[in-house]
Image (cartoon, rainbow, N blue to C red; front, side):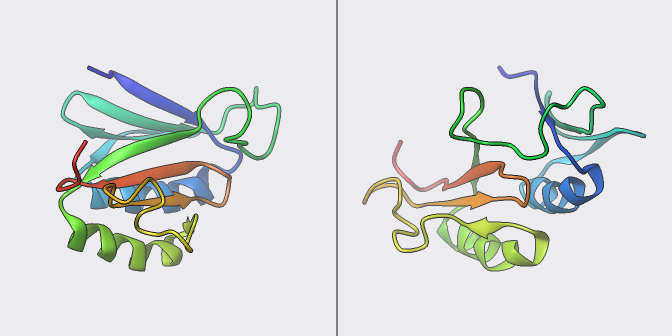
Length: 130
């Protein structure tokens, strides 16, 4: 089981605005908060955002070696569609809109969202075959 994921972000306030909405909409609850970071927990797993002074860039590039995206289960297609409608108000942009909601294939009902710092999430409807 995954323990935690830590994302280094260039602007904690901006990132927290987007991620807090998304993670709480997915059932995560606030877990930790300190001057340079925040975290949200679901069960024993948590997601951390940190604005580290050791950062070497001001934007995440998912096409470079390293993390491409995080994928989350969503409770059904209707809930996924609702999150996609709400996402722009929280700093998320729908990727691959011409192929949405089947950008991952005809049998895969999902949304691919990118935040203002280049981090991507994939939201997968729970009723989608795996």
